[in-house]
Image (cartoon, rainbow, N blue to C red; front, side, top):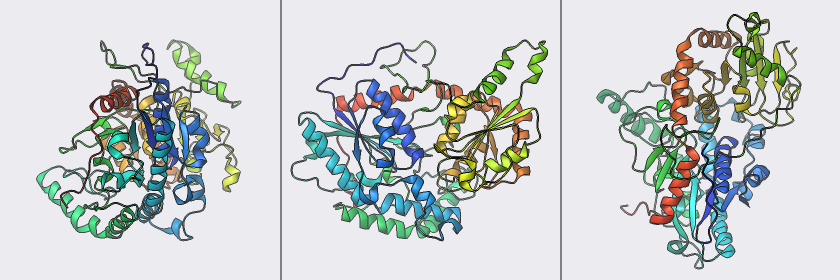
Length: 508
């Protein structure tokens, strides 16, 4: 946290238009960034789903609604999936369904909403320019870079100064050093590994996703694009069209690629305590962290948790210190929300341990175990929260169990808590492998672990200090990068240099 004051808004400073994929895990980081930008004096507008309107407006941004098929309610989507057989599909096939239903099918409507948002901003102040801040998986701006025409009253070169991409998942950009996401092969950047990777991209993934690549072409044409995205699907077009790519996260969690694209930068974390500057350095601009809700969580057992943490501050000779329990925090996430997958096995794994306290977070306000059909006796050492800040709970944790969402991983890194992960689907499989590769935790290799698997993973983390040491090394990396300052600085750079919008596909 810096003591410099935010720069006051100026009449000539451009508007910032934020667009983001509608899943909670994508929105949450952008909401924190929007809060910080508002505090720094940027006038922000957020094109988002109506289900998240309240959270978006709480940032200080002006909410602009998505509509029709672009207005995705992610909670409703996963509670009532696209078709009855969805849940029975292999996770890799569910990912392809989600990419179609969430990213490609609504692309023309997203584009229309984006164009309308530009008109709203121009009407608000015709003299103000606009900078686009786009989360990578909002596909609705892609036509802008591939020749789609704006209405005659919106002249591209006169209103848009440039664009900035924020990546809130592992970077879905093709590399010679990596196979396509989801393939069960270890990281291998050797010559033989690169041959293997190329074969997987060009002989397997291209064939498997050819129908999605064709659908993208169709949807882009519907939106008015006159050039094709001429690459294997999910190779990175939705990233590389932007002037700069800010990758949330730390370098130590990501495989060391040899071919990062120009303009790619690790941007640190939005999770956890406010990041600090490197020792002896001053930030290039003011960078307040988003406002946190500092109220004590409203659970009758919360004081028990804080009291347990306070025991660690006693002298080693104090007999009361021996009463301190190991705290295990487990969360189900916001997509795969069945508590039987992860929460119930964790409760059962440690039900008879007087030296352990389990805090289970369901992930949605007003949720409870019975609402998911869970009928078990809650162990005496378990504390259940319907909705609770991960950071608040992890400040007291020894182990963090979750289903490997990218945000959940970063919460663990930001708080220096080693983890046990059990996740499949979307980017969760890749996140799980990186948890193991980076040494910050255990990958159980499945989405529905047994009681024995959970217990074994947690005990291994508790017994081996190297997991804690490594995750604290990554936490140190995160503390050396001020995410909000970096986003602010990139916006200032675009404001000054006016790079414009890069046109792609001209070589086709």
